[in-house]
Length: 618
Image (cartoon, rainbow, N blue to C red):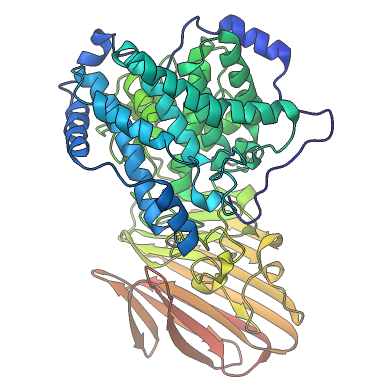
């Protein structure tokens, strides 16, 4: 868990137990038998058709590769090495391999139905039972879970629990009675019993129950999936359904009403896809009576990628987002493809593979695509809108695109808001410039996760603090962290030919002499396009000031500015300042992908200045 994530107690007499009347209502709707998105292996009509499907062949081939390999060495020694060496590198490589084996071997065995993988499925599962805890060591720094003193659950343990439950449900009597009893026992000890006792007591509640980000949707979905698949009593399954249903609002509360995901497109795919799995298991288990997607905000969240695409295949990389991140294709089109629903009027058949990009980590997700999609081999997708701009007003985020008939694809983004969002970077005022599919001024995205990433030392990272973003540094100070450090929108003017937006950046800094700092963003669509960024700053006493560009491109200083190029795409940045001379310095960011920071600063401390960048394709 992060540096500021702590379990909590409710006031005396209060609990998160679901309302008895809701549990009763869901019990009446609940199927008499266990269920999951896919049927048990005994339903050969449903499963045999996948044997010769390209995805089925892919799963079977990968399963044979994995079965021939040694089991990944995810053991207690690896857990302790992570903490002793203060390095997550080894454990972060092992855990995805284990999840892939759990997922692929299970699905392959159900498709093939020959018993080929039963032995390795059981040996892998029993090895996990030897672990002191299923949670990530970074979430157990004091080793209380490892020693059995606490029974927390996190993303890692929740995914393991779903794999155990689905193994029990899908394979059924293909498993020995002893192995099935083992699966139930481990889930009760580590997963269901651990959390339910806390919920009923209102004490030591897992912190992710009330957070406003992906942990909430992922963990709650895992509890609902596992309950549906393995708990024998309808009342118990209904209890967990009502419990997850009552707390999932925390996830959607983490989004502004415009649907923007402050965690970025990568975490949209993770968090929202598991919101979908929770919504779908609730819908399936209640015969459609419960549908978390049947409200306008949830649907805007689901459609976020449609509005966030800056250029074809390119998405914003703010916060902890991969530079080349793309939303999962099946997820961005889920509203149009789930069974027993009405597609959007703009949806039409589209030639994409619903399994493309899936890393085969989550069996529940694969089962939902396989069996709860209208037709996984004839998916629908909405036609992309040719919008000149998308403005997410509550989130202070603007995307500007060139006109459809422009000779070059020139685009830019501009971000305000606050420095306290989920997976936050201190980046208020950051902007990105793209030309013909190349990012020439950019936000360099997330750092390689380490023990530091979610600790109190997070903002020592140049990629996470404002040094690694194209924003000012004032009096030698970077932007501050927290929701009180804000950059509100002062003005917007949008026309077909020009978009203008002004942010007040003063509130992003704690510099006593700073009296005013405004950043103006003007995107001009005429000709080949032009972007003008203007910083207007005033101080009560002479103070140093610098503005910056972050670029992965080749840099060429010219008499009339700086040329940034990447292959066939290049922009010219003309820089000027009122009444002062500017000096240019370079620094390479000390973490991958090692972009260059170009700093433009007056040669002496100033009391006021207007610094302008005019950026044009060349």
